[in-house]
Amino acid sequence: MNIKDKAAGIRRLRDDETFKGLVEDVRGEQVTVFLNPHSSEEERMEAHHIVCALEKIEDRMSTILSDEAIFDKQQERGLAPWKRLTKK
Image 1 (cartoon, rainbow, N blue to C red):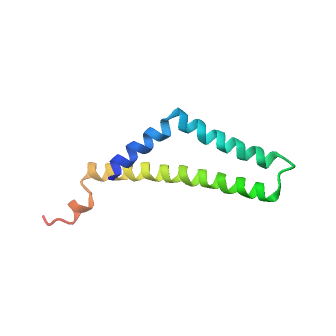
Image 2 (image 1 turned 120 degrees about the horizontal axis):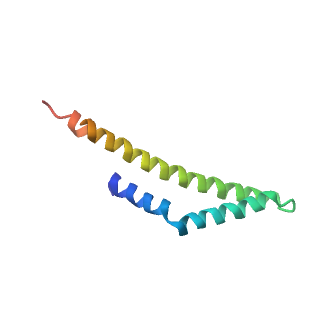
Image 3 (image 1 turned 90 degrees about the vertical axis):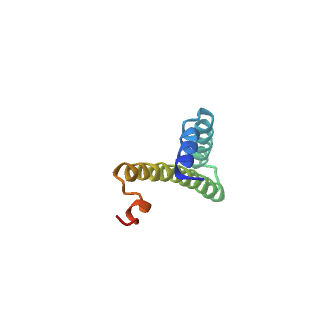
């Protein structure tokens, strides 16, 4: 899948209300585990890992969108790698 297709898919997913609600629900459940004084250390560690995983997913989504922006800027300026490597 090329960078434009990936970015378009990420944008659709990021803007999808169902997806956003799902992520917020999962994150909220994990925060509840942290705030519950009766949670075991194992439960808190699991909640921590889940929150970290959600952040990694969001970071990867941002990276893909940034990669697209860089690609677009290179296309604008004519700096695409295949254009730089061709002889004039």
